Figure 1 (cartoon, one colour):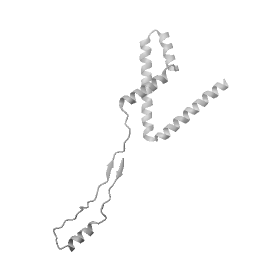
Figure 2 (figure 1 turned 90 degrees about the vertical axis):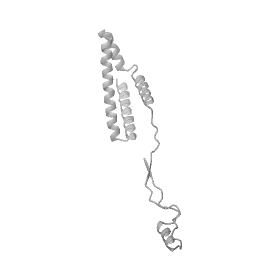
Figure 3 (figure 1 turned 120 degrees about the horizontal axis):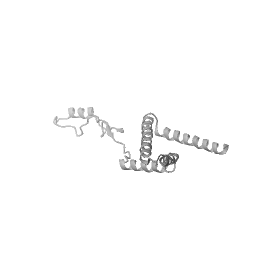
Figure 4 (figure 1 turned 45 degrees about the horizontal axis):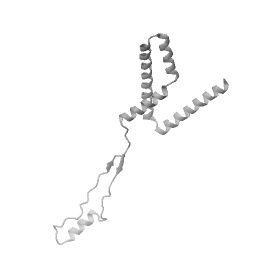
Length: 143
């Protein structure tokens, strides 16, 4: 939000000067040409781009869906389903686990968002991903 306020006197003549001119005038029925009243600050909403619920949902779905295809969680689910011969039980268990981890991510993300600036969160995530990448490369070169 942005606070703006207008000047108290636009014409350059103060209220006391107008009153003095009226007293000096022979016609006491004159009224000031400009009524000067204190102006309250104007609150202007800053235009922020609000994303619709469908855009946020779609972006989240596509991102998570593409990230999860072919990862170790999906391969583990595939193997458990083949071994147990109970695909629906494995599906319910893996779905509940994904929902729980997503809930933890959302709750932790909202907690962090209330305490840190978005720039700090972005930089921290970048540093963490860089450290993880370096650790993986180090592991490859060592093994």
